[in-house]
Image 1 (cartoon, helix red, strand yellow):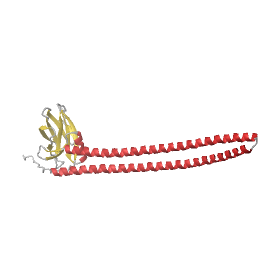
Image 2 (image 1 turned 120 degrees about the vertical axis):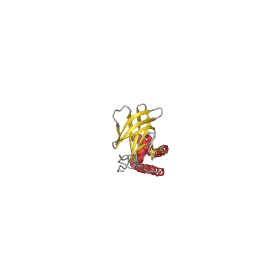
Image 3 (image 1 turned 90 degrees about the vertical axis):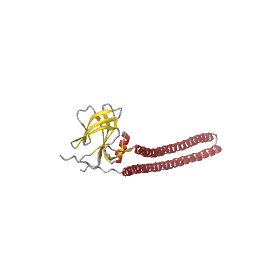
Image 4 (image 1 turned 60 degrees about the horizontal axis):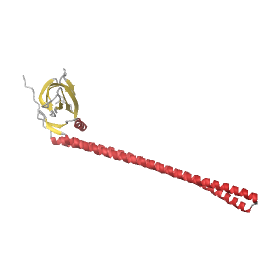
Length: 291
């Protein structure tokens, strides 16, 4: 009976992984900067529209004010002319006519006072309207500035979070002696690896009490034993109808095995060992061509 062939995978160069990681991070930051530029461009357009709208409204108010004020001024000038004529008539008229002229003059004086009050009220109202429009425009501009600041802050936070998450990731050698990629120890780091897009990732929770193996991606797992105190576990991996026992493995250790679908190994990483289950993820190569 011929021995089972052994496949040896050349060690992946860590520098290549880091270069790919840095390139992916740069792509993310460039995309974020493009998004920021587009948002700022939209906000600038909105600010220009608000400014044009405000100037148009002020111009319309100015024109309306000019028409109204000119009309009221002409009305007051007419009343003043009538008042002067009534006063002249009062000085040159007889007693009864003088009384009528004086009464007319007093009536005209009251009308002039009323018209002056209207002019002052109209001017005050128009000034108040312009101030309100300016206040609303300033509020909109302030909102736009706040939005720009918020977008900038969000981009900066995203960049800082990405930098920190990437710096926290670790690279390790798998149990087959093959240099593994970056290892995620929590959900945030796993999400960062997903964004890199270099491999496929499948999260799992495998129960010890399960009677049948649990499917994860295109393989199945059967949990045999756990030791939460030592953070170790043993699991049977079924791939290509071939059973591969993985015994006494520790958390965050890349557990590697080959399948007929890929040249690079699959990797199993368990992040938590509890009394009746393990929690982690399976990562598989993007390229699924036969070896």
